[in-house]
Length: 346
Image 1 (spheres, one colour):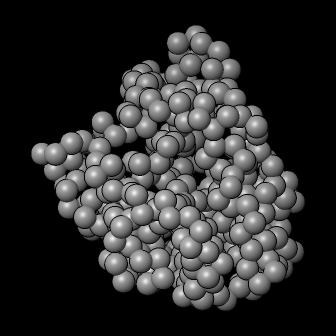
Image 2 (tube, one colour; image 1 turned 60 degrees about the vertical axis):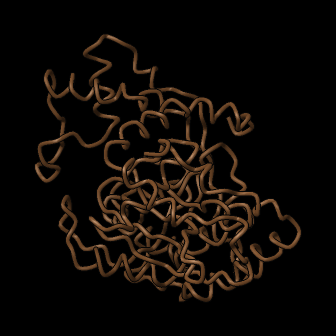
Image 3 (tube, rainbow, N blue to C red; image 1 turned 180 degrees about the vertical axis):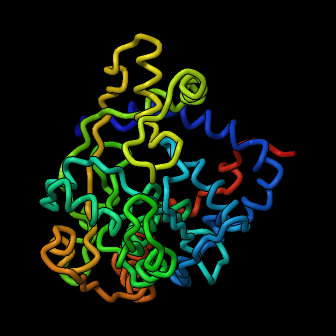
């Protein structure tokens, strides 16, 4: 529910988070001491010398390991994203420490608040959804989080560098299903982790409200199955059911977790209502240009983006949020990276 107690919601997610950490342990535990070396100590970070840098994460890199490790510390289970993916580290170039994470992936096809805000009909959405990505992880790590570094990370998704990375990676690549090219990144969506968000609220730049709230999810999904149960259900479905792909271009696998869970519940003669968990998450849209909505509705063939560099946006975030918070609240200085250790000393 929108007014749900956040500590209660964290407890609901705790088992799934523990499962993901156990699953990652064989791959990351031995590397934890090195990874922790890039998490800043509050006593050693000078807020007024922070120099933000945007680093794109490449596959099989150390940055990818750090991204995977850091996301395990979120209070909700964070997926690895679906389909197309872009991942970034927001880095402190002066202290050589991690500030935060940005992870973008394909959006879900059906998201009522987003679709209502755009004003989509089904056919236009099929063709224009390729110009949308969803932020599956977005936020700062300690001690930067205590200095409102999350606002800096949130503003960074609006940068020209993020949009250019999308264009370089996917702009000339036809989508698998429709065979069409994603011309530009016109919009990013995200949902709050724990009901109403304090991270995205009031993120403004040059008079623009960057994160626009458009409604809440309905409180259904795979949350009740992310504690390890999903893998058992997936194996059951693999053995006893078939995918229901509507087009050959979808391939031979299942389209998403929802299809797997729905089929598993049917095989077990259990009600699909078990997918209802009641955790309603606030939905935000981030238009990447003033005419994003008209472009996504198909009313115009081209899209005019905002042209704000990461350096410009990060500099504004430091002056607007990070430095003022650091001056009036020194609690960030008490953060010790050792408290982030997940698996103990080797």
